[in-house]
Amino acid sequence: MFFSRSGNLAGAPVETQTKSMVLETLVDFPDDALSCEFAITPAHLDSMMATLAQAGVQRVIWSDYGDGHGGFFMPAGIRGGSSDSDGLSFDMHQWRAYAATLAVLGNPLRAATQAAHRHGLELYANYKPYETGICSFVAEGSPQARQWVRLPLRGGYLTWIDPFVLRHPQLRIRRRNDDLLTNVEKLTIGSIHLTKQDASPTRVSKEHLQIWTSDFNYRYQRQMVDFRFEETVEASPSEVRDHRGWLVTARGAPVRVLKLTGLRLDAPYVLVTTDVTDDASDFTNTGTRLMKVFDLQRREMPAVFASGTAVQFPEWEDFRRGGLAFDTGRGHQPVTLDLPNQPGDQNGTSRAQGFIAMARGRNEYLPGALCETEPEVQEFWMSRIQEMLAAGVDGIDIRVSNHSTHTDTPEDYGFNPAVLAGLPVGTTPSLTAIARIRGDAYTEFLRRAKAATTKAGKRLRIKLHCAWFRPPDERAPRQRLAYPANVEFQWRKWVDQGLLDDGAVLRTFGVPFEGIFDGDQVAQEMITTCRQREIPLTVNRYVYGNPGLPGEFQRVRADGRFSGFVLYETWAFLSFTSAGNCDFADGSRPEPTVLGVDLTRQTRAATSQAVREVCRLSQQGKETFDISAGENK
Picture 1: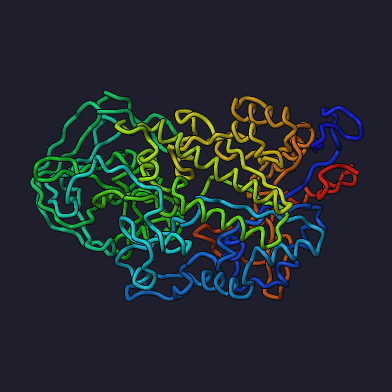
Picture 2 (picture 1 turned 90 degrees about the vertical axis):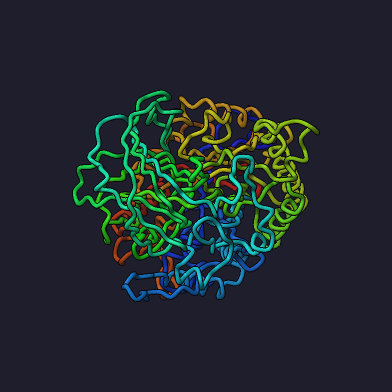
């Protein structure tokens, strides 16, 4: 329900509820554009807004990807439907269609805003400051990398990236450097240790193991090297938890270790697999703990591991014909070494299995996220705010979670010169002090963004991330890759300084949805604080494959503490046609592969049906609501 900023509704106390809630939807436009094999035109956007308005949606939130300065670089020139000499298919035609869309629309945010206004809808820009280089990975030695070499990282290159980051890569969030070996790229690997999650017997013997290497992380070759083999049981030196936070191995618990010694490996990329052909596997650990490598002096060599899937381009997992993605943020997922791993075994939509690989060294920077303490970054972020306002939007939403901070060791990042310069002279950097300095800088950006939007007569809303805006040891482990670590997100200060006066959006991803009603202390504090300060609070909800959505909407509306409900996001329930139309997906047309995920007709049709029902329910008993004025008539 919506509470007026004056504290009452027609003389009623603030607790009085209206019968109306603003129904919103979010457009993450790359997903919509990549789901089409043709360019999206102004006619498509007009049809989209007409469909949403007719359904009862009142506000559209449009994710901005540098729309005001030409958009991000992308792999649009990669040939679609072609293959290399070994028949490995690269079906990338949707990137060409997306590029054609940008050419037709020019500035998608402006085109969408104009279309929304023609149909009586508000449109807010959705801005993710940290999202300036999507973790789209092409392997170092691949033909695609030769076409689209942009920003290097261990194992390959980022290709979907804001031009500003490419011009200023040193402004990204930087890693600590006090734990690295000098010239790690030139050290010879003398031994490899493979550690199981427990001490139970394993079927993996010396005869099963294979070592493969590559100079360019592409088309690995088996090395017929001999090695000494030793099997031991040792105490785990530390606790091991997986990507969900579940305990895998307790500190001091016995674990089985396979030691391959007497090696002399100089290749930058080394992979271990087995020759097993059945699924009776037993050798499992998290991807960051399964493998360790040591030089000839028995020093452990810093490395990143390929044990999961990048956000994009998961086809690189076939190491015999392609390459691998390292340090993807999914390294804490369990990996089973002794699963079959022949060509064709890899599932392009799930994490890699049946091998573990390492690349020497660590990534000096996070893939694409910029450091908030750098003055040039602050100015760049503010230029983005001005671009969005210039597009004619009615407001701007600010969101922290992103796809540019992915790493298996987020706690090691945040050591930029501008951060360290803020520490007291002579003190040892502590994560707490670093988090506060960075948090102050992020708050300063929000303060400037609020002033700019207010001056323009627009609104600024801030996403409250339930899973991450809490003490570090209470954060949802599965959300680690989506946020910068070592930042104090000072949401209570934002409230006190009036930065949320225009509204907030409760983002529950990473915590149970039930938590907004009861059980999640942080969510309850956020809701109570917003209610006490009369801050309009909107609930964001994922809709894809969620048949219970109508019931959730009804529960949120009946709760009485919320002013809006966001259907997240449109690609899950809308469908474009080559004729220029946009309507609810009904399952009548084949679905393309989007970003490596097969979107089935049945699921999209069912999602559309659930969204339609939410739209129908939102109309029941609705009073006339002027979203521009922000109060009931």
